[in-house]
Length: 299
Image (tube, rainbow, N blue to C red):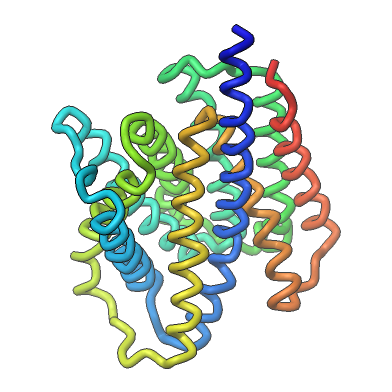
C-alpha cells in the first residue's frame, strides 16, 4: 500500500499542476475572442469551427511527425471517441447559443454546474469517492461563479424557453466531454485523444458554416489574436487538460477547472481594464477556496 501511494503522489501533483495551467490558458480565451470580435465581423459559430479545425490540423501534423504509429483507435473504443468528439462540438454550439440567448452571466453560472454532474457520474462509472470535501468544493465553486457573474447582470438577463434549453445543455455537454475524455484517456496518448476529439468536433461544426457568414479577408492584427487563441487557449489548454485528467479523478479535475473563472476575471482586470466589484472579488475567493480544499489529502 505504501508503494502505491508513493507512485500516486507524483502523478497527482503533476495532474494538479496540469489542470491549473489548463485553466490559466482557458481563462484567456475570452480576451482573445473579444479582440478578434472587435476587429472582425465573425459569428460565434464560425469562430468555433475555425478554432477547432485549425487546432485539428496542427495536432494532426504534430501527431504524424511525433507518433505516426499510434494514430489509431480500436473498434471497441470508437463509441467513446465518437461521444468525445460529438460532446465537444455540441458544447461549442450550445455555449455560443447560451451566450447569445441568455447572456454571459447566466451562461457562466450554468457552466459551473458541470463539476456536480461529473462528480456524481464518476461515482457510478469509476467508483470515485463522493466525499464531503468534494461536495463542499462544488458548492463553493458554484456560489463563487454566481457572484463572479454579477447579480445585476443575472437580473437583467431574460431567459427564453429556447435559451433555457440551450443553457441547460451547456453543463451536460461539458460534463459529457469530461467523462468521455477521461474514459478514452485511460487507453490512449493525450495527443491521440485530442486529434480525434477536434477532428470529430470540426466535422460536426462544418455543416453549420454554410448558414453563417465567413470573415474574409482577415486583418493582420486578427491573425495575431487568432494565433494566441489557438496556441495558448486551445492547443496548450486542451493538451494540459488531457494530461491532467489522466492523472486525477474526473470529479476532482472538473472542480479544479473552475479556477478558470478566477483567471478570466484577473485577465479582464489587467488587460481590459475592467473594474472588479466586491461581489466578483468575493466570488473569486469562494472559487479559490473550493479549489484549495482539493489540494489536501482526500477523506
